[in-house]
Image (cartoon, helix red, strand yellow):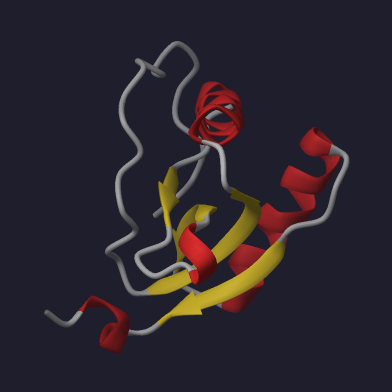
Length: 101
């Protein structure tokens, strides 16, 4: 589902909103678009699928990696991300109700 992409497959693009139900790793919360985009681009180049959370507190942009079908798969990704970034992420589950109109 959110496995790293093949090297070289990382064209710049705008952050998409997380729409898939499943488990995600939250890797940051940003008030500044430039900091959000810098980390999103770095993770994308490393092969991770990224998106922004559909609902955010206090107008923050939450950067998520995923979706993963199980908590265990998301936790495995969290550990890989921790090694890459040097900081821990948080597991989040986006249920179907987050995507209702």
